Structures are given as C-alpha cells and as structure tokens.
Length: 627
Picture 1: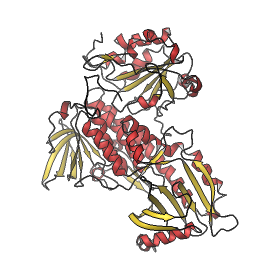
Picture 2 (picture 1 turned 90 degrees about the vertical axis):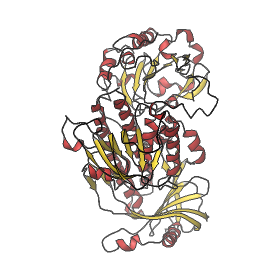
Picture 3 (picture 1 turned 180 degrees about the horizontal axis):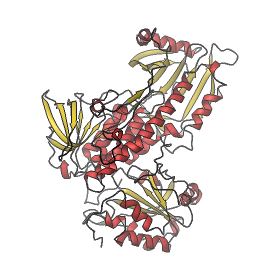
Picture 4 (picture 1 turned 180 degrees about the vertical axis):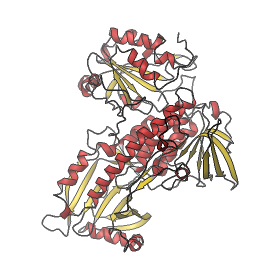
C-alpha cells in the first residue's frame, strides 16, 4: 500500500481525504444525483466502492432493508473475486477470516458395497494452473461490509441509505437528470428524485428491470435442494474439505466448509419437483433433510448440534435478454440511462458458487465506465459496452451451470464412472475461477494482430499475474497485485535494459500531443493520474540501472511531488515472467483496462496504433504540462 505522497499520514491510511462530493455529503437522499444504485448487494456495493474513486461524480446507493445485512446466502468466492479484493485493497483482511479451499474430494458408492460411500478421488481446488489465489468461503454479508468500508472511506464518502424503497422510474427524453425515480424514503414518505443514471441491483425480482421492460428467459425448475448451514459433529473424514458425495440410491450432497473453523454447509438433493409433488418437496423440513443426509453419508453420520440457516430451493436458470434500457430497442442513436446487474440479470443454481462472483464483475465492469463518462474522459456511448460484454458472460454462466448442476444431480448408474465428474471439474476449472471471460473486439478491446508478442496475456481476458522483482527494494512481488481499482488504465512495458525502444516510447508517451497520456490527462494533474505506466525489464534487478530508467516510470506524484519508485520491475531468473507469459524478448506493450482486462498488445515501436486505440474510447482534454 502506498501513501504519504500527499503529505505525512499519521492515521489509518485506508481512510483517505474527502474530495468533491465527499466534502459536504448529506445523510438524506438529495433531489438530484449523477448515479443512483438500487440495492446494496454484491453487484451494487462494488459500484459504490469503485465510484468513490470519482469524487466529482455524485453517487448514491439505496437499500430497502432497514439496516446492514446480518447473514447472506452466498458464501463461495473464487479466485477472480480474490483478485478483485486485492485491487480494492482488502484481500488480506477477508482471507484471514475466510475458510480456504485447497482440495475437492469426490465420494461415490463403494465398489464392493454400494450401500456405503467411499472416497473415489481428490483434485486440487482450484487446479494449480488457474491462479495463485485460493477459493474462499465467507458470509456474503462480510463481503458487502468490506466493499462498503472502501466506499465510505474513499474520497467520495459513499455510504448506504438504508430503509429506502424503490417504487418505479420513468426515463425522459431530455434534461440533465433524465431518469425520474419514485421512492419511499427512510421515513416512509413517498418522494421523487432524479438521476442521470440508475443501476438496478435489486435481485431476481428486480423492480428496476420491470420498469424498463426487459425480457427474461427462464427454464422450468428440474432440480430441488435443501440448504443447511450447521454446527455439527461427524465421523465423516472430509468434513472440512469441499466434497461432492453421491450415494447409490439416496441422492447427493455438496459439502462446503465455511468460515470460522466450525460452520459447514450441506446442499442435499431432494426429489425431482413436478406438478404432483412440488408442494411436498417445498415442505421438506430441516429434520427430514438431515435424515436424508445421513442416509447419503452411510456408513458415516452427522450429528447436527445447531442449524444456523435452512432453505429449500428449486434450480431455475434465467437470464435477462438485455442489461440496459436501450439494448433491446436496437437503435444505435440512443445511449442507455438505466442498467441492471447481478441477480437482476441472471439466476442459476447455488452449487456452482457463481452468483456473488459474477455479480461483483457485473458491477465493476459498469461502474468504472460510469466514472469515465461522468468525469468527461469518455463519450456516453461507452456505456453500451456494458450490455455487449456482460450479457454474453451471463449466458455462458447459465450454460456452464446447467452442465455442473446436471453432473452433480446424476445418479452413479447414469455416469460412465467416477472419473467423469473429476474430468469435468478439472477441465472446466477456469470458468468458475472467473478466468474464461473474454471480451470481443470493440472500442475497449483491440485486435490480436500483435498477440504473439505476449501470448500469455490474451487480448480480451483478465491480466494474469506473475512474480517479478521490484527493483527499488529487491522485493519479490506479484505484478498483478499492484493493480488498484482506482479507475486508471495500465500500460505494462516489457523491455530490455537500458533499451532504446523503451526510452523512445516513454519519451513519446510523456511529451507527444498524440500520446494518450498527454491527450487525456487534465492540466495540473499528475502524469499517472489516468495512465499508470510500469516497466518490467527482462534482466535481473541487479543489472537494472535506475539512472537509465525513463522518467515516465519514476514520476513525481501527489501534492508533495515525490518520486514513485514502485513502477520499475525486473524478471526473476528462476521464474522469468518473459518465459512464463511468452513475452517476446524484443519487448511488448500490454494495455490493461481499469477493470483488469487486457485491451491491447502492441510492439514498443507502436505509435499510431496507441493513438487510434484510445481515440475511440476516450475524450481529449486540455494539454497538460508535466515538466
């Protein structure tokens, strides 16, 4: 964590100085605002945590609940979410209180005695190739707490207005605040407020979605499960390991260890719901579900000492056909003003653990774009890319979840053998990990003509970290872990030291009128306020001469204008990032979006390509002077 650049900080550095709309923030919801977020679940609160980095933008978030969520249903956090927590600077804290998954065990009928279960295999969870981050389990409420703390301690001082109920909205054709929203405020008084943009993060029965007439395609329920959070004693040996358990005749259990060392979640399969038995299935009691669980676990048993939460759910898959108010109209002249995110867009089974994870990525994808537009860095048309990118992700999520749910629900005789589920788990691990998302060619994602210069950073996919040495203090770090969710673009220059090409590129970026750093950085702002440029040399850190490093990579920043030494890195001989990520030894420039997705790979000699790429997604400002 870096601080002191604006002067000495003697208090908690996570509480930053208020700026802009954070200086005179009122507790009550005002009459007008730039962004109104409806719902403080994962999709909504991550947007508040991102938009606090844009204090010029007046952001408000409302929640119908009267107070903080005490316990959430979702609990599984996959590596992409952990990367996101790292970018928002609270991964270490949440990981400390979470349970960590390292393996998944698979149990099935014993080959000699099918009435009993036996462990069939174990698999790394996630497989080592997926990420350096683990899978975590922790209460959804704590995830919201950490994002909320980030939002409230950031410059815009965004906090949640609890007890405010969204009623409906109307989008007008003109006006500075075209979205008219009707609410019941915390005092139960009906009010009308207006916003430039509204984001509906209000769940599967979203009122915001209904107001913009978005079609939802829903499959009929074909599976039912009991969910039990419990404190229990057992002789089942994998009680603290994520486990898939299939019995011969009594169904299946998905076992999820929870945070705190004692809490465990069981998903227990029930009878397939139909018109004749649906009421009976829904009426299953906790005691009946526990009895079924014990039959599945035979010869082991579980003695439940306390049920902390119990529910029955039927697996339905649904996906919204558009994620904003204009996508379905197919009119290129219109720009969206109302969006939906999270469960308002997609619902699926809980067993794949994707609901909270994908919702967080929905919110992050949209919020930095809103920040770009509302600060004048990008044209309003940029907001169309949210629907284009995330609707496709949602459909792929539904397709994956159908496969995984069906696999977990099949009886042993319906499978080729115990290897089938293991093979599927390992083969598809990147998807639940959050790393199969690939954004297609657009104004934000370039072409792949130069992809061979850095094959390990596929264009359109998230920037995959690797270990490097930080030259200034010789510390071994993960390059991607220095990424911050601060709304900035990243320019990663992989180069030879000292290298003429990297020197010329840095000089051009710092001084040319065609450079995006010059064209899109406001006058008087730090040189790295919009573009965070870093250099990674292929030599060992001992061979890097600081005096030869271009000033672009050692900028003077903050109110005090002190040098930032933490932008210069070197490859580690035994874990060479150039070899691991297949980076051309002649060098490459990897451009990364503010949400950590690779936007373009180019040679260090590129000039026109860099200019053209950013001209299509950003707006020029008054030319700054970085001298």
